[in-house]
Image (cartoon, rainbow, N blue to C red; front, side, top):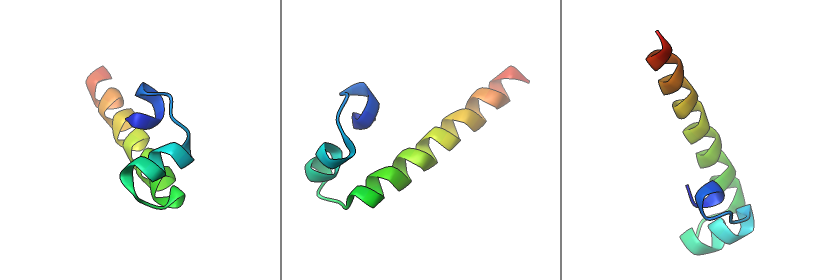
Length: 44
């Protein structure tokens, strides 16, 4: 959410949440996949 809504970099989000940048990328990937699944389900 912070990555896109607040237009923060991966490094900025990682520092804010006190997690590794790889964790930010993993969470972003999972979140976008979940959003895509939800949007596909809504179209059915």
